Amino acid sequence: MATAALVGSTGLVGSNILSQLLAHPSFSSVYAYTRRELSNPTASTKLTPLSSTDSSTWPSLFPTAPTPTIFFSGLGTTRGQAGGLENQRKIDLDLNYDLAKAAKEAGCDTYVLISSASASSQSMLAYSKMKGELEDKVKDLGFKHTVFLRPGLIVGTRQDSRAPEAVMRGLATGLGKLSPMLKNSWAQDADVIARAAVNAGLQCVDGKKEEGVWVLGQKEIIRLGEEKK
Image (cartoon, rainbow, N blue to C red; front, side, top):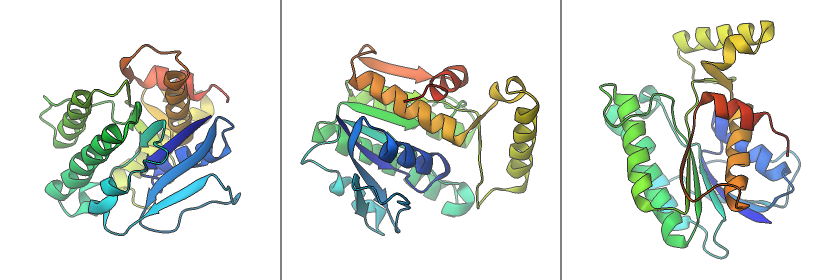
């Protein structure tokens, strides 16, 4: 049986990861970072919230008894929510890295990150550059298994969607109803991404993937996300 820790548990992809971890028979316990009460509709006894309204304390809360087998990160915010690019970097880059470092120091072997299809530390775009910088810093930590999922547009219901994003998500949903092929090459459903993340993490733990860095593009996300537990 595996144990998991999760950050970003109330976000679009993270909330789906949480639901799948709680329902998955391969996980005996799930630690989830949160600023507010977490949804647990089945009253699962697996869930242990790691609660603090001060996210700067979160790295110090990383479980060590026992140390989780897999650490999942779906943590992210928008420039608008954060109040500017520098504040966004403090969450998407700095906090994510500090949590990954805490996981590594605690002895966690497998790290799974929801990144972005555009991630590149050489990018001229601030968001893409930030995601790429995080990937580079996490690689340097040297987890036994490092998994980066790089989805395209994430499809699902967001409370904070900007108008253009909402339009694109609506378009993706409509095209997906006509044919998955019209959507899958550029947009993926949040639950599919979450399932791919969980399945990828378990493949690492079960020894089905060689050690090192595993980057999942959109095609592989769809493939793994369609696999049932």
